[in-house]
Image (cartoon, rainbow, N blue to C red; front, side, top):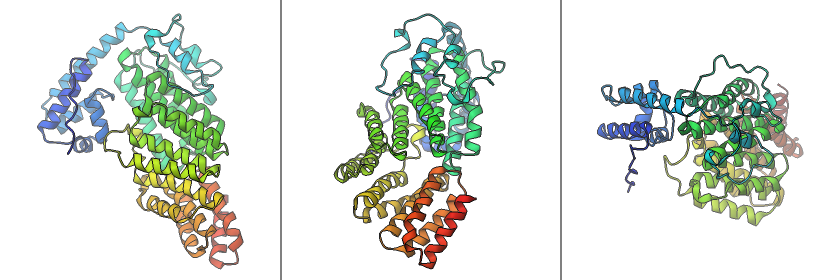
Length: 458
């Protein structure tokens, strides 16, 4: 039986009032959050967050919601009051946040979530530009030489935060479809320059967590793309920045995402013990994480244990992940967790079981079953994930005695690898070519190995 929606409090702010009115109109029209989201090109979880004043809205979106709900201008008019309230708070909140930013720039070791608030930070009002140009500047490998302030707003508004969200969403989509190198890496530079420059702009206190969360999400997307392109120093920098931004915003969900990517990268580059540390660090206060977030991090633990040939620990971690994932509910996760569905869960656990098979002699059946589910259920928005799982399944079949199936699966994976700019995908198909070497007298296998060679060189 579905749970009754949590009551909303319209007395906290004008944005909360808007959220209450939005829910009221939605329920009046008999629409679910998913149905309303489809009308305005948002997810159901995004509508839920707007209703709870947890996600930025803007004038255009308010107008679209008004039209979709036939609210006859009520939501438009109320949103003008929200903006007027934001402007008023902005004039009253002329206090720079350089001290907190200086703390966020200390990227030495992403760790326990900071519990301090802005009111608890001591120090003088120093321009935040000193943070951006310091030794551990948020801009990191990009640099600050091209930054200018002519087009920056005088005070942060909802629209500015929303633009950063849109940038990270677009980059993540490109990364999943085309890989982290090429266009994605080039486009991200300008977007990240803009986003980090907003940190030097006066911001109302109520928008501070949203701004840091949005910039942190963009940093994580950039870190994940750099990892896929094998720009590993850049990846560690941006992912570390993502952790610190999440901690400053008090956002445990975003922090879990960053720690997951740090874990995955460490495992990939041959440092599974560090990866295990990142994964377990991400699970600190797991009671604050959703089932999908917990399952994601337990999968990272499983992959770390598998690389270390610890069969029992890896299998236990997968079992724990499966159990937790079974309790996931629609609409409870942040937008960036939309990728983590049944296909992703089976792909991640299948990769861990693949390593157990290749490195420790574990039975290949469970790995094959999970990888097949991932291949079948990954949509076209996740070409890279589907290609990686396909390549792993081909390698698994090639290594365990079914070269004909391996050839068929391998060719399908190569159809997609050829569309990507992903060093991870390249490494995986090269691994398939090495595993296939012992069977190269088979004509089909020889053809597959030759196609891998030409695909990688293209």
